[in-house]
Length: 272
Image 1 (cartoon, helix red, strand yellow):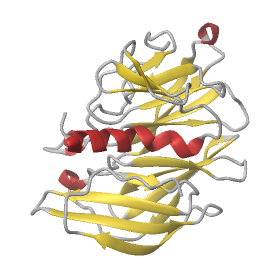
Image 2 (cartoon, one colour; image 1 turned 90 degrees about the horizontal axis):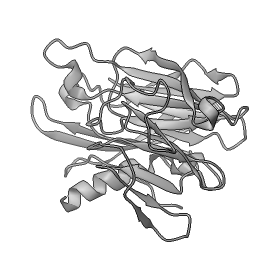
Image 3 (cartoon, one colour; image 1 turned 180 degrees about the vertical axis):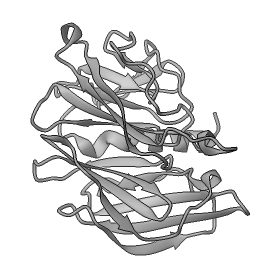
Image 4 (cartoon, one colour; image 1 turned 180 degrees about the horizontal axis):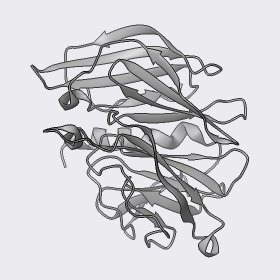
């Protein structure tokens, strides 16, 4: 694995870190059947995973740091490393930059939402692609191993490979954001579930499916969004843009173009 691959992997794995306040992110599963356990304060290698993914993946544990489940956006594995009940056939893709992200329900600790983004190739040569979808896991089912109770609810028929999430920081829920063309779609996830998106039209119009690769990321405090656009058609170009995000309204504003002088794909904020 090259240094660039490592950077992309780390950027992908860090997707869920701002969502939780305790030890829900202490277990990571990624790559080909491997993982890391941070419960001791230092990473310990895990070799019991069943996941296979070249890019997007997400893992969630309980507040004590015990593994609940992990997913590559196509399949979900429970804590016993078996496919979760009804946990196959999700509409992400193992080669989508940010294939999947897990978000909890603030009113019911058993309920988790899994958001998936399809890969760019699915839209090429007349392909319709799967767009942006979510499924719902109930951890109280199957003896505490969890079950998918709702699967592949479509939010956008066409989208990008980008998805990120952050706490609203006021206890009311979380924001999940994705991007399509020149629009940001910010979904508030609260105790009632997934709400209609706040849509902001701003920035470059990505009108070719070859160019929907790259990442989107919230800052830890939720006040900033960074996004990368890897442009391949009709000629190579790249964008790294920074925006302000309103945690109360879901509106994206105040665009700043950071750079266009190198390849931008993964993206991450420092802790502060």
